[in-house]
Length: 282
Image (cartoon, rainbow, N blue to C red; front, side):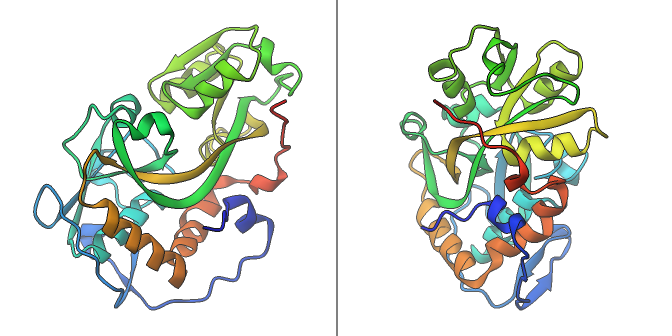
């Protein structure tokens, strides 16, 4: 697959060709679904319903105050399109910890759509689809911080438990400061605002919306080429991997994947990813 990232989408003028679409009914919130798309039958645990488990809140990806009120967002609408093309009429979003998802401890869901990296360690416990896009790692800190590529290693750094960022900090960053591990992005952002850590590492497309929403309090200072293709996670042995791969291939071919990112993700980033300085991992 060609690695087309958000930075490519935002660094150039994107003219997204209109495709036949239909407004979703209440079951799929504010998402617009592709009309007359080919169907690839999914086998959900609950008949007619796609259950998606993700760490909430995640306001840019799943827009709503509670799991029951989510009705938009770039990953929610990706799930809506998958459910639509899988022959299902409804999505249920449920909250689950990041750690429980990537270690296979949670099984009462059909899939998790949360920009997850399909690492070899994770594949021992769960299954993954093929990639649907590419992402890297952003460094977010208070706007007045002196964080640079040279000083980061001496800082107090926050990462999510089990993330590729945790692996990078432990194995490559040559950390002399403190490393703090968090169960959720919200906990990590709160620690950053409370000066309990000096910087946090997260997927760039997760860090940028948080900085944008901070009204100037936070800034993404740099990004590392750490990450890769992100994919959809399934409980081990799921029958839904193959049909989901077929759906993703169709969405890539007909422009629906790009359309969801242009409509839902690009406006909340606040700045093109390509404008953030890339820091070396060496």
